[in-house]
Amino acid sequence: MHGVYHNQNFLAAAEEVGLEWPEGAKRLQGKGYHAPVLSAETREYHAQSLRELEEAIPLVLPHLELPPTSNRGRVDRLTYACKCDSPRRFRISRTVAAQGGITCNVCGHEFAPE
Ligand SMILES: [Zn+2]
Image (cartoon, rainbow, N blue to C red; front, top):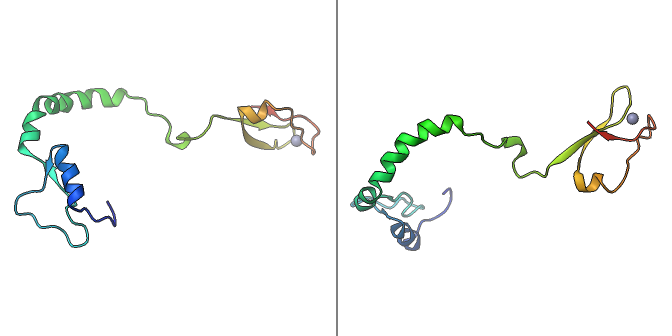
């Protein structure tokens, strides 16, 4: 990771999940053991799964429906509009909207979900 020194503890954790520091590789100044690689034993251990994933991923990926990135982590909100000639609009959570009506002081009508 950017700006993080990968010390001996990082390498020990990497080794626990089957990575290793390549033989003869040099630690990078300021970054330490920044890029351990898959060990031969780990590659062999997971070989069957890796082959299956290589075949399955291209078949499945085009059919996956990903959540829209613009809405990630956001609460589901309603868009409310009034009856002005150019309606005034705002987004509001369902909980807050349920607390009661909101009236536009320009057109005098209550804002309603679009
Ligand atoms: Zn209005």
